[in-house]
Amino acid sequence: MIDAAWIDDFLSREKLPPRFRALMGEVHAPIAQRIAQAAQQKGGPLTVGLCGSQGSGKSTMGAVLKALLDAQGLPTAVLSIDDLYLTHAERQALGERVHPLFRTRGVPGTHDVGLGLATIDELLQGRGPIAVPAFDKQHDDRRPQPEWPRVEAPVRVVILEGWFVGARAVEGAALREPINALERDEDREGRWRTHVNAALAGEYKALFERLDLQLLLQAPSFDVVYAWRLEQEHKLRERVAAAGGDLSRVMDDATVARFIQHYERITRHILAEMPARADVVLALDTTRTPLRLLGV
Image (cartoon, rainbow, N blue to C red; front, side):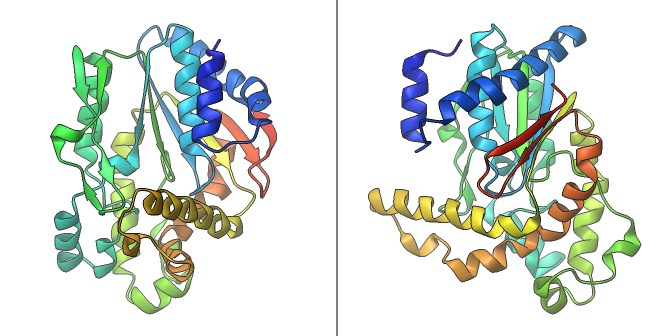
């Protein structure tokens, strides 16, 4: 079991309500047990994909699962796909070479997939402290390598979490019609979304084929993502303000509304097709309260 002091500190740090303590036993513990069983059945290191739309609670889920698995004698590392973003300079170059929308981080094509694969291999097979990539969202750039956190390897479980982890590409014909104003006005010829889809069908497919188990935090619809992402940005503003940081780099509400349109097409596709194939599905309501847990 997780140490009670760790739970108290975690709830305080993440500003979670007291009822979340009960959720750890009702939701997180069964999922951790499902992962432990999969690790036992495989008889070797396990890679788990944790997918969920922006603001769905992936980071919280990953942190609790790590604590539960560590407590069961399964050393676990959590790797966010957000920490694999290309550097700011690399994304600017991609924007010049392919399409201006690639200057904005987030979609397939804006990550260093090779770095992700190498990091997973090191965590599962390496020895000693392993440097794990870290991205600074406030400065929109990868942190210098000396600042990357260190994880003692080998671990038994790697949880790769991200908003589209495990997603699949769509048929090319599905890309013809724009899905929102961003695609209609800024990707009229479809070059950006076609390149995103090709990346998902290529190097990202190779990354996701490494997953032994797929978890999904299922939002009720894409419509709630704006509210969830807005909540994240407001919390970031509070942290930056408290630290005396540069608030100009924190998005306002209108910028968030435009920002999430980058994610809409893939998020809608995930919500339509992934629940039927994911190993574990946690369905959420609009307040992120669990409705049902399938696959455990």
